[in-house]
Each structure stands twice: as C-alpha cells, then as structure tokens.
Image 1 (cartoon, helix red, strand yellow):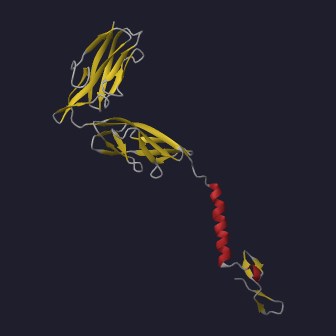
Image 2 (cartoon, one colour):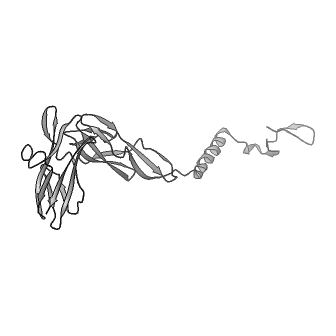
Image 3 (cartoon, rainbow, N blue to C red):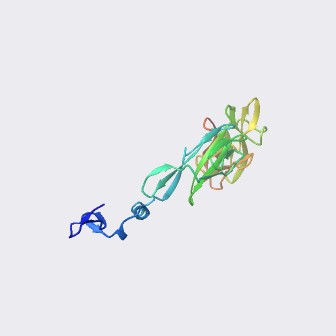
Length: 239
C-alpha cells in the first residue's frame, strides 16, 4: 500500500501504489477480482495446449492363444495425433465373433477358451475406431492328432494321400484323443493348402470338404493345425 503527502505536509492516504503508480481507491483490487483474473488467464492458456486425438488402435498380443478353460488378458493400445502411444484403459468395447470357441468380457478384454477350441476374431472398439486380432483356443493335452478321410470315427484314418481327378471333392475330418476319448477337431483346426487356387478345404462344418478344381493338376499338400502344437498333413494328388 503506498502513502503520499499533501502540499501542506499533512499525510493523506491517496490510493493504491503499484509499480510506482498510484491508483484511485475505487480501483483497489479485491480478492474476488484477483481470482477472476487468474481464472481467465488459466482458461486462455488452454489454447496453447492441444489435446492429441486417437488415430488408430492395435491389440496386444496380436495373435492371442488361450487354453480351453483358461483366461488371458488382452490390451488395446492407441496411437495419437502427436505420435505418442499408450494403453487405452477405459471406454473400450470388446467382442468375439465366436463365443463357442473364444469368449470375451466386453469391458475388460479378458478372453476364455471354450468348447473344443478353435479360432475367433476379437474386436476392440473405442472413439469410433476399431482393431481386430485372431484368437485361438485349444485343449491342453491332445494325443494322436490326425486327419482322416470320411466322416468322424469312420473311413480311412489316418489319410496320407488322396488320388483323384480334377473337378472332384471328398470329405475329411481332424481328430485327437482327449481325456481318453476321441474328439472331433475338424472345425477347431485350421486347414490350409499349398495352392488354394486349385485345391482347398472348407472346414466350416464337420466333415470338411476338400475340392480339386477343374484345372487342377499335380500334388497339393493340405496342412491341418490345431492350437500351436499339433499339426498333420496329407497330399491330394490330382491326375
């Protein structure tokens, strides 16, 4: 607070002294005024800091695998407009394309292996964006995993070669022993061909149907994989 002296030498209180200037009393700042100035300054400063926006989502692990009856945590990670990357811990909605093989908690991202195992597409969605990953579930202890021709528990087992003409098809199934019982693993397995342009298998139901196209010729290898540890192969020879 500044004090000034009148011409008569009498000391008079004239106003508020700040920065070498005397302001009239009516301009004297109050606590409320000071708080208002600070608040306005804080609001204006926000303009200098731009909140980064979410550009993309990825899932970790990118190819999850879980044993039937067990669980695994999935994580959604975001890449932002400022090129930063961090885990998205809230606001993520999770879903599974096939809950009979891999179920998922829609809010936490915890997957559970179901049934006889298989694959499912896991989707995580947040802020208008989404990402997917293929999850695999499997039975923990399989023995005698093999591929057979025909329908489950019938036909030729195992099959090593199927000789056929072009433009034909035949049925096959995958099987294994679990807890002492023979189980059908056809739809729970992944079927791939050495050249799917000419020979391929559809295992959307059991038994799987393998096709030799009309212009197929030669030998083609079919690989059937269950989980991460079991596989079997056989040859389709097209005359």
